[in-house]
Length: 378
Ligand SMILES: *Cc1c(COP(=O)(O)O)cnc(C)c1O
Image (cartoon, rainbow, N blue to C red; front, top):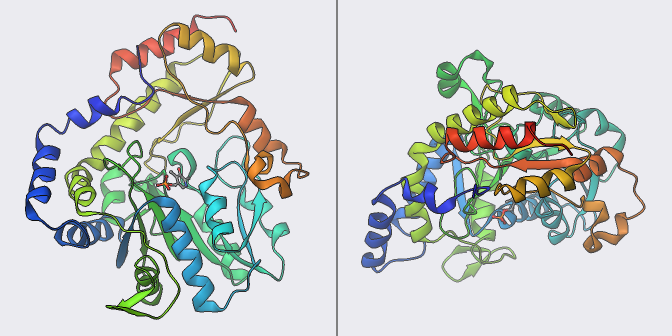
């Protein structure tokens, strides 16, 4: 049986370190807002390259907190508009509606899962306030173009980096130089949101999230909003909620962060093997991006006979996933968008199949998956 992501095997690869870190926190008698969180925030900000990192309870809260903070800081009205891709995970849209703003859905590229920057301009109205590019599947959106459109139209940009921990924009300068001078996902716009859900490229043993930014005012506001709107103890200057990373999770993340680059490099290696060996008339491969601007959170292929392919692989013990079977405008939760025609997003939803990939996936498993795809009829 080849699991889509063998989380147990992956976590075992850290040996005793995760247990040691957990034990230390449990013995400390201090579980919320302590030393581990403080250290992790410094270490993650330094890794991403931003001045500030504020941790949260999950990725959805990280996205929501930034939008709520901007709304308060800039006096945005309820119903003001935020542009996001229609093929993203629903959390990106939920953050917008939770902040009482209006999602405006944009098509992605055909051969790249990220938002099509050429479709953004026509969606901008006098009420547009922000764009949320999503680094979907681990591939960074075209940030130069998106930032240019944003500057030109006085919009803010929030990166949804929940699938792209460690990705480096424009890293074609070579990996060595890129990791020194490149701009990581989360450091290419006004603010970014991360999730540390267990199977993300950097994941903890439960829920977790973070915001990165260089903007001091935003950092302070977000820190208050995620802690009941509190600025000093029992003094509440704005309306907030409670969303915090706990000490146990921060301790786990501090064990895992130093290995993130190596683990991402292994994902790229697997992607390279899939890309150069899968060959079947019914399978459409996406262009290989092997310069770390794609950290292959998901290895996606497209197949018009996806249902049959998925069933054949399952029969051979190979677990696959679909990211995502229903685009936002076709979800019952968002009936107001049901009349939208978004053929590119719909094609992604109908044809995408995600192959097994994790830093712990073995060469043998990857070869088995390739053989199963190449040697069957569907
Ligand atoms: C995982 C994810 C989120 C939400 O993160 P949670 O921690 O599960 O709340 C948001 N956006 C994208 C693109 C994600 O993949």
